[in-house]
Image (cartoon, rainbow, N blue to C red; front, side, top):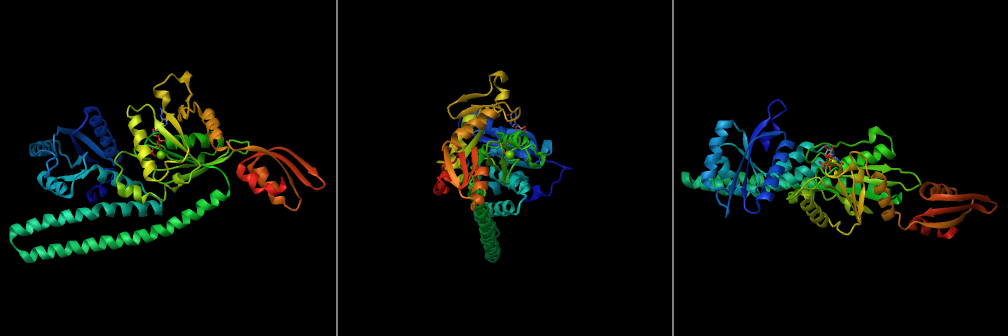
Length: 428
Ligand SMILES: Nc1nc2c(ncn2[C@@H]2O[C@H](COP(=O)(O)OP(=O)(O)OP(=O)(O)O)[C@@H](O)[C@H]2O)c(=O)[nH]1
Ligand SMILES: [Mg+2]
């Protein structure tokens, strides 16, 4: 991982991707394709792909030793700098492979952590990624130690072994204390976030969060909403054909009119086998998801694996404690696989649409309204002139149907949320 960081745009790391197939061939091919996309998101150039049918894992190398020799020869021929494994390697497998291949060896988790550390921009994201990285390294240090022990054993020098162990113990303590520091810093940042979130929930605008598999089109949908309803180009977020284009959470106010505004948040995408330390580290960022009034799950419907992606999303949401939040399913990129004239198509809580062309956006908004503004009701208030703030609040957050100035106060007939009706119960 350290070597990768030093490679700039001028020279791309040439890599061979390798994987052992133990289940269905179709799933395996897809996961190898995803690994290739992950490597590309890491600015690596994939020059070859190697796979092996495996009945059981080889404890020393994961793959068979014959396959290791094959990869080594191939790497020499093609001038590869690294090999990325699709399977999660144990610390000793990682070390053994590194030694046998004499190349940098990475696994899928490594790659995901590497992408995250490159993309992290805000202080919070940087702290989260560093913590996740160290948590990944920590159990691997033990593997490195047992490896060193073995080396010490062959040289027969007990004092050397002691020195090696001491050094690693020191490293382990350093890492543990750094993790402690990071956790403290993160706690402080999380308090700030909590305060912001509370402030937003006081504003009583419904909060809607975009969730889903990486590259499904979450940021594109956010941008389309901003473009159509805000007309403010500078409020756009980055949307790219690249895994994990978004890491930081962005919140935008969407104002479709009729006082049915809401806050929309765009956040990091999910992926199968997302390293657990990352889910843990991003938990606070993903609070936006847990406390949302509604989730818009964006699905890349043009991807053959979309059902598997939905399963991954469901499991990740469960892990975040957000499985009970109401949900609408945006079956996105339907423009690629359906007749455009048939869009949008609505089936229950699912809408087949396109964030790119905007086909279905109005319909989606209607569905959102049906979900979050379902508790709207028509109320009549008589607000005394002293309470000017109540008058302006209702004008800002309810849909005022009629307003009259009477001697005893302002009479307002409005369609408003249950929340606001209760808030001004005294004037009804
Ligand atoms: N054809 C088509 N392409 C789309 C549509 N929506 C998004 N895309 C493309 O899909 C790619 C990924 O879009 P993003 O909006 O960045 O996806 P994301 O879900 O935010 O991805 P991450 O932030 O990486 O998790 C981009 O190249 C988009 O142009 C769509 O409705 N139709
Ligand atoms: Mg995005």
